[in-house]
Length: 169
Image 1 (cartoon, helix red, strand yellow):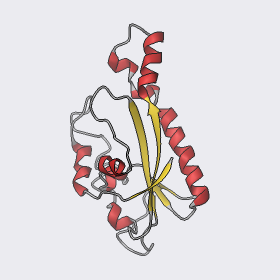
Image 2 (cartoon, helix red, strand yellow):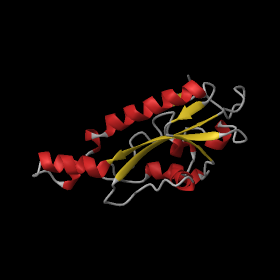
Image 3 (cartoon, one colour):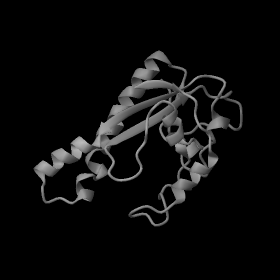
């Protein structure tokens, strides 16, 4: 799906990457290690021209049905096992890439970022504006993968570096 959005800029969301989560007491292991991750990722509002339209490109994945199918196949698995992201991550990533390819057919001069939170976008509030409620507490029934697309500021602008997690047709 592709929908016009008004990104909610909140640079503080970048700090979430450093918060602990199961299996990662120090937060995301990529934080501060990759150019596409905070604190090195550019800020969305410095990278994109917000006077131009910004689009959300997204897919949804019915996690509840996926879990139910796995419970039928593996009744002895724990809740954590049937929701293991490795069992659905590649499928959703591929589906988002297909949506991005369709988007680029119509908007070839737009740049797409697949992790807008790293650039200071509150994706939860941005999605809420267009009727998408992201779920952060268990049980989670639907997973969304959301990329944002916009027109970059002038290439010569030092606040607009080339970053590897963007795509252009």
